[in-house]
Image 1 (cartoon, rainbow, N blue to C red):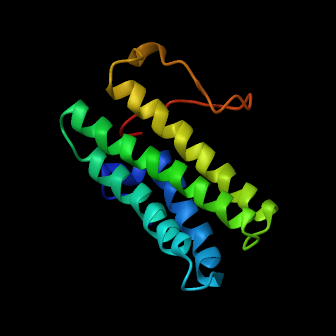
Image 2: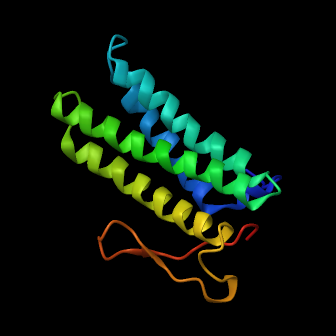
Length: 144
């Protein structure tokens, strides 16, 4: 897909789309009566949409607000996967794979939020350590 908009160039956006694609078969296998099914569908969509909308905002506080909403939606998706595991509707290994994608999205969003909220200097951005896993993600540039 050729990049036409700035948000399409963001790794956070690309990874959010990857999660949305990954989670679709999971959602399709769930019973229609499960509340978590609808919540997972809406939250996974919300990640993508809020990154796109936020990246289009000119003021940094507005941009950060949308990126923070996207980060919250990613955490919500992780919690949905946990609920499915404890209710024995999803294998733990499957949930772990999805949460790994989400962890990357959250890490990338945290870097963007830090950049646009002035918490890091653009010339010397520190890597964000994701949840104490020892894995680091480099902060991404807005239009790279």
